[in-house]
Image (cartoon, rainbow, N blue to C red; front, side, top):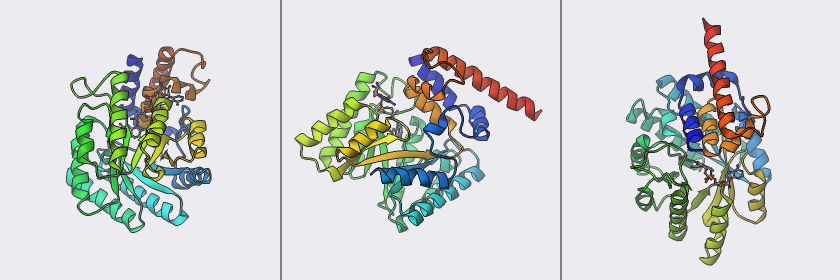
Length: 329
Ligand code: FDA
């Protein structure tokens, strides 16, 4: 399990495969967890969710961008998404990753890109969530939030429960609307819990703290044990339903998403779209190797165990990458 997780996280960060995948279109089953490649398809998906009583947080896929032009293109696309949310009057806000907007190029360049996005969203009263990425980008992300929150109030961020220091981050950002998650990246032992039980315990502690604090909490998980715990907790503590929501990723546990809506809870689905799906999709496989079943029969039989499945996928990816390089020659 650990090895499979590491393998997919390693793939998620492989630049060559990421670039190849952009030209593939949505492949390998990604179409079931990515809501299309363009704004029109994404808006259609959001409308369908809204019709079921589900709000959306829209992510224009992309991360770890090292090219100025690419970061500016991403900024323009997010501005267009904001315009589309407004024009279609859908119940949706934005999730973004600072590394897509140039954080690795220059802090000030990223700050200016974000300022433009947040100002436009502010005009339309649209909330912007800063996703948190790996540890090396965490403090710069918080610095951006500190700076931009002096000018805007329509921003919030994510607290990752696997970090030992997560509670002190939460205390610092306790006045913000926050999403609380377990954490999706591979972090070393001196920074983060490695054991599922420890992560789960910290996750619950953080959720309870922010719920009691009275600020809006997005509980982002597919874990029914955590969800059931939260349901009991909010009941015991009389926490109003408009102070929190559950969030899950597009395409995952759809029955449970609808069940929670039916039970009267606020629900928001994270809706990723675009061409840059590979890193996102590989992290989903890292979290839950059973998600390999999404990849389907063309790669391997569903009953194949996850280690063999991961091996089969690796071969497929290497072959695809090689073929492309060969074609280019
Ligand atoms: P986890 O994967 O630990 O699973 C726990 C249990 O739940 C499983 O053992 C199984 O029983 C059940 N389960 C889980 N998935 C299932 C499925 N598909 N079908 C059936 N049962 C299932 N991370 C990050 O670092 N920064 C971020 O900004 C974000 N943002 C974000 C937004 C949203 C909306 C979500 C849902 C998640 C994130 N994440 C994230 C990812 C997050 O950190 C975490 O990696 C994943 O959500 C996986 O952890 P879970 O809590 O979902 O359960």
